[in-house]
Amino acid sequence: MDSIDGGNPAGTRLRFATPGDVPRILAFIHELAAYEQLAHEVVADEAALHAWLFGARPMAEVLIAEHGGAAAGFALFFHNFSTFLARPGIYLEDLYVRPDYRGHGIGKALLVRLAALARERGCGRLEWSVLDWNAPAIDFYRALGGEPLEEWTGFRVSGPALEALADGG
Image (cartoon, rainbow, N blue to C red):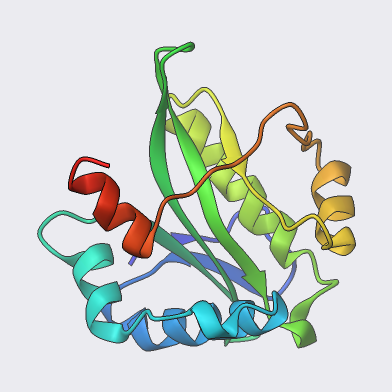
């Protein structure tokens, strides 16, 4: 278990998730989805998380934040690649801190650790998305030096549209 304790708020420990954390990760995902008013979109289950996070070819990594010995939050991330930089990057898919633990510096500690990982791994950037109505998160990210990419529009293909595209359009 890789623990990252240096520089964290008092009483906070960051560590990489292990297979035993899958139920906790799924609980965080459900809590985040409820906060984002997207609970109806969650189809993740423990088996799928275990396969994709800890299987033969892991597709993402998770940092778990513990505060006072309790699970306080998580960051789920994966590598992407910038052709313009010719370097990998880290994409932060989810960052969540339970309400009772907000204001303790845990979210910042998770982002600081991700930035350090990006540097350690030779990445050229750390990126994420935030819902446009989530003013507290936007303010938090700006305070840490995050810049909105207002000239970019995100696109997604999923479900039946993904199936149709995979079949040739």
